Length: 130
Image (cartoon, rainbow, N blue to C red; front, side, top):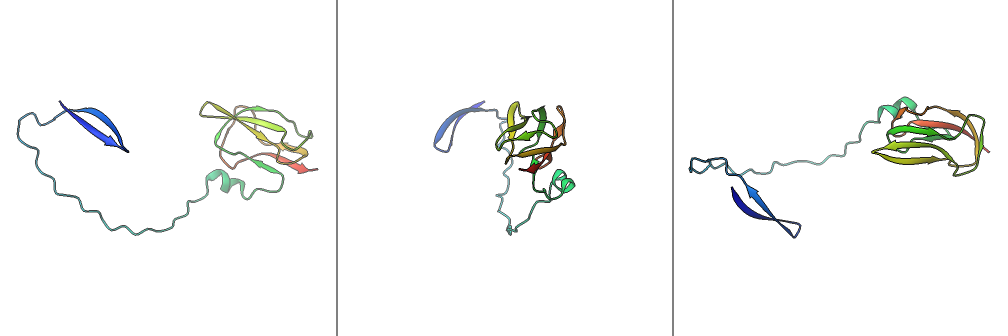
């Protein structure tokens, strides 16, 4: 074992390094790597399956802000809601995210149920504007 000090972003760390070649002979030298020439190119990512399946969001569609699991539905079809009323709760990475109505209106349809897994951009609720 060999004790070394490594500095990363100005912060020093003491580390123990195990020497694997116990025979005393130095490890064979490796040729220096030369960086390869890389050209940059703009590549756009393909749409996610949830977005391509759902197509373009229609007016009144409330999309999921993230991928997660539906914990609770707080509205029913036909219910009138005010702007910023809580529609449902999602859970992702053990944190709850609340989804709110973007505007006042009537809930036309709730497209998910508690326990459903949803993808980012997937339409959760359809609303008609007041």
